[in-house]
Image (cartoon, rainbow, N blue to C red; front, side):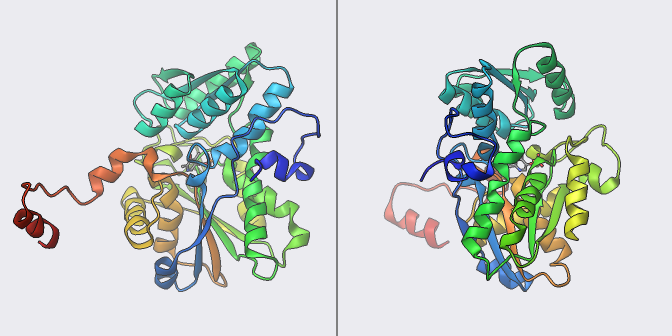
Length: 344
Ligand SMILES: *Cc1c(COP(=O)(O)O)cnc(C)c1O
């Protein structure tokens, strides 16, 4: 399968001769969720964005942002990150043979994401501050120096990420349009991108899906209507208090007749666990916020077929899984002990 730019070049701002930095991102599975469907009384599908090359949807945006940076002659890229943007930028920059610096909140990102950024050779800067401060600083940095900013404030990130909406339409087909998309919201780039993708495909679908965004209760500026000074949630990928694309996200929600709601960490973990042990799908806690939102708030009136965007892979954050999963049963190395251990 070709990468996104090749597959959707006619709908992306790239010309035929432009350099393409790709890891064959996109074309992720859309998996039916029978148990979740039963619980919610609808037809629920999971878009497994953790199946992207670096394990999150950020790769869709990054193939475009890094290709654009190379086209424009940049020899370095920079981003602020809660982890997945850093992992993705580091991988695509390595692929392009250019320098990458990532600014992350010190000690606040999941281990798997840190491992990726480090092994791909990025300069990893642990900021004594939160994501919002990191984003403000990299914006200043990229204005003062010839270094390309690859956060979702970069329009090419949105262009790449909108392709997830194209894939949903292709996979479900025009006869079976979805009624809604449930998605976790942090810096609000992804919900903006999906809405752009659906809007650009309006002529191919019978009706537009409602955008249902979910934020963590401790980091819910779009629900509260104001920035959150000290955002807190165990869902570290959406621990953002002042989303850069907040206004666009609210517009997507109102234009689509959707809603933005919040869910507690406890509700997020319940959904995270449900997906893993009832559907066999392991996503990261931040991704499970979308499913938590549906479990808590139910399907809106008139919504039957719905897709949950599961934004990142569970292996990104092994600590949380081990902490809340069933413990390990110690066992002597003989058959009787193993029988007892296995059957209890
Ligand atoms: C980045 C990210 C989000 C939030 O996406 P935004 O575009 O910042 O709203 C959600 N989940 C995961 C796993 C992420 O990496």
